[in-house]
Length: 233
Image (cartoon, rainbow, N blue to C red; front, side, top):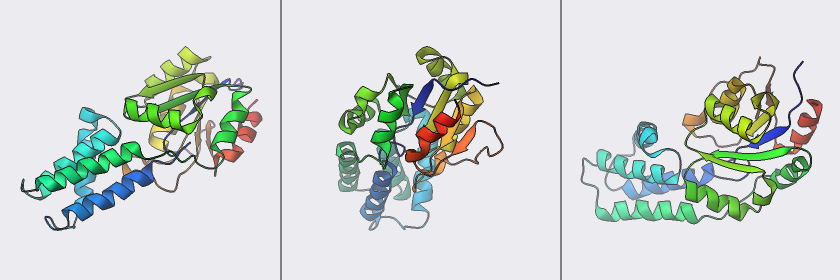
């Protein structure tokens, strides 16, 4: 019989605070900046392909996104993109890095409640400085027993993190809005995976939910997480 969880990991972006909406807003700005220089057809598909192609070079986060926008702008204009457009894309990225944090519903009270009885970890990926900035602005930093900003989320990463900070993945639970990054690899490592959908999901984070797995759970919002965790005791 499985033992109850002692460690709970939280994803950050679009689990505890808003993130994807700022990428979508910047994509609209990207299209506007290129509207006089390239046809709009398949522009977003070209950008997504560049993001996917560049993950191995730049990793996840705003900086890689900005570089992918610049690369796409060069490609779709046959290397004729004006310097003013490149400058506009750089400014758009800088705006993203300055955007204030907006916590999602129930984020604060849920983390506070669970922190009283469990080891609480923040496990996120993206730009180091940007993630540190967002955590500091969130006001949640003191609630976490450990913070891990990783280049990618794999079963091996979850195995190592939950072993180093807790009692191993078998007694850990991971909460997030991405099936591909937060839920499936955590379950593959031996942990529980709790999926809390967000209204906006980056295409590269989509996956099919492991509905039949005994350690998979889906919640409508973070407010019901404490009851779920209690039911696993």
